[in-house]
Amino acid sequence: MRLVIARCSATYEGRLSSTLTSAVRLLMVKADGCVAIHADVGAYKPVNWMNAPNTLREEPARWVVTNPKGERLVIELEEVLEDVVHPLDTDRGLTLDGVEKELQALLAEHPHHLEAGLACVQREFRTDLGPVDLLCRDAEGRAVAVEVKRIGEIDGVEQLTRYLDRLARDPLLAPVRGLFAATTVKPQARVLAASRGIGWVEVDLARLRGEDEVHPRLF
Amino acid sequence: MKFRADRGEFADAIAWATRTVGARVTLPALSGVLLEAADGKLTCRATDLEVAAEISIPIKIAEPGRVLLPGRLLAQLVARFPQAPVELSGEPDRVEITCGRATFHVRGMAVDDFPTLATPSEDAPQGVVKADAFARLVSQVARAASSDEGRPVLTGVKLEAAEGRLTAAATDSYRLAVRSLAWDQAIDGEALVPARSLQEAAKGAAEVGGEVTVVFEPGQASFLFGERRLTTKLIEGNFPNYEALLPDAFETGVTVDRAALVEALQRVAIVAMGQSNTPVSLTFGDGSIDLQATNQEMGDAAEALPAEIDGEGLTIAFNPGFLLAGLEATGTEGIRIELRDGLKPAVLRPHAADDVVDDLSYLLMPMKIS
Image 1 (tube, each protein chain N blue to C red):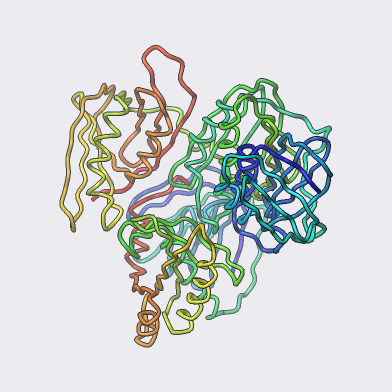
Image 2: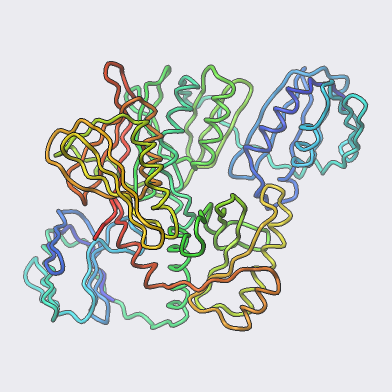
């Protein structure tokens, strides 16, 4: 992993063309060849990036990144403030956790993928047994607690059952309905959820990711 | 402790303290309301360690003292009390509450477990602003804040005090609302205040009327109005540089009757807000706005309404919920929409033919349509 903090501008040509004006940014070159330009906002999302495979040609005060698809990213380096390289470990656990976090964030933004008319009130809603992933209100205004997993198994249903038990004691929320969401819900988890009156829903990560492209952000 | 209070004032005080702090408590003592009877008044305090609420009402004291009573229970009781004076008496662990012919015995909690509330220091500069103007500013801006705790900075409202004005800004990254107003007594400073706390402060200020005193200190902000005070912890982190997002020019300017646009949008949005969050597209041109929404699962809807349009015609699509929130925020008879093209953010502003309007800017990122 190579991290460069530099005052730079960039132009990208490919599926569309875009320009970044001069500013101090973080340039990230990953071991697999991905190149990303990050600003100090926008969570995980770079302001510009090129997925591997890429060819990075370093010229004086300029990087030219090209790929076989004919995309081209040119970064003009005006002032390099930091330039460090560290090898990172490949951590499969973290990758999985990342998918779950992403699912949670996307479902918070687009809760209608879970149920028509559902609106997210809060992410990571506190209970005294830990935070429930999403607290929502359904079309009739009733509280719905949503637990999000990458793969939905019975321990996730157990976890949601415990949260529901705590949330039901809150007269401002009660009655609280449970909804178990995952990209795949295992048959045992479906049976357990149904036996406890908890709904389950399988969500399509690719469709959810598509939502973000439909609604661009200001920053 | 023994005192007698007016039922209405007592119920309002308990309701305000418990509502302001909310129900998310981590320690048993935090579910309580601390009642302190001293110097002819009753002071009620509640906190969840993020927000602290304090309110005083005049009472007749027979014996001063302090008790910590379960907030929710107390609020539910007093809300149903008959119209008669409320009397509280007893020791901290067993309090008798009577109202009319009803008597309750409530087990109190250990007073010492209740944390000391954050209070503004006396020498901190105090800004003063009219309560109704403050409440209006907050209601216009805070709606653009995010509810996503995953990005805490966006759940706040940025307050900046400089050059005699108070500016408030909030954004959830899809839209941005900014407005300022003049202080009656100016201060300088800034604070990133949780939107929920600020909305409670504004709601309280609107109820009480008069003036709001604002105090910014490192790590906390306080809002004082009437006999009430709300002190909230600030959100740490850098708020986005929103000024850079505000466009300084536009290609197409639209002036339209707000109520007519809201009604048309609400009708068309019924189709858009169904199964998936479908955009509503607006085509500006030839003195009219054509609204359109298509939902593959439900059907489609279209409506046109007259508007004054300067500049090139264009089509742009929005999340109908975000657009409605912006239209509602302006509060004026007319609305001004400034556009550059179908993919760049639009700016909504209040508009009134011959009246001064708020300097509200509601910036909204369009959605992509195929």
